[in-house]
Amino acid sequence: MGELDRSEILLVEDTPSDAEITLRALRKALLTDCVHWVRDGAEALDYTFCAGAYAQRDARHVPRLILLDLHMPRVGGIEVLRHLKANPRTSAIPVVMMTSSDDERDIVESYALGVNGYVVKPVESAVFRDTVLGIGLFWMQLNRVPDRDAGGG
Image 1 (cartoon, rainbow, N blue to C red):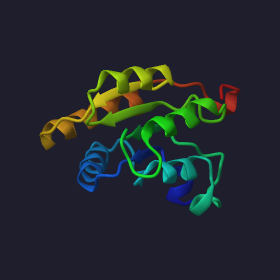
Image 2 (image 1 turned 90 degrees about the vertical axis):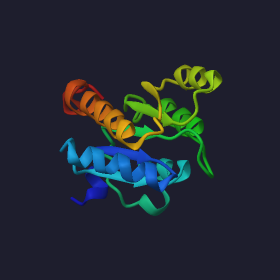
Image 3 (image 1 turned 120 degrees about the vertical axis):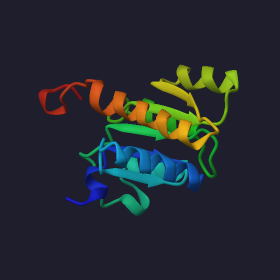
């Protein structure tokens, strides 16, 4: 089984510097070595639903967590969230919106669509790294989800 089959965290981020900080923080904390980074919403949907370049990916392996940027090229975070939460196979995946937008309309719309968390990215890289660590620790170590094999999803 390759990394594309078993990624536990899907990072959807179009800014390379933000992606690099996030990837380093998650790997340094040893939360998972199975992080897959995609650069826009269209690629995120292809990855999650095993389409396009990811058509050969094993559909049984869905991410345990999706870190989703809001404003991206091709397909934005709101539209990705809408697709994820509307599909029974992906609706229970925790999605945390990580964005530079603190616009109340974006926050309200994200929660209305079922986002599990909304975090405004800190500007300072050390604070950003610590924020990612906190998100990762909660969702990957503390949060509990039903066992898929036990009929929970």
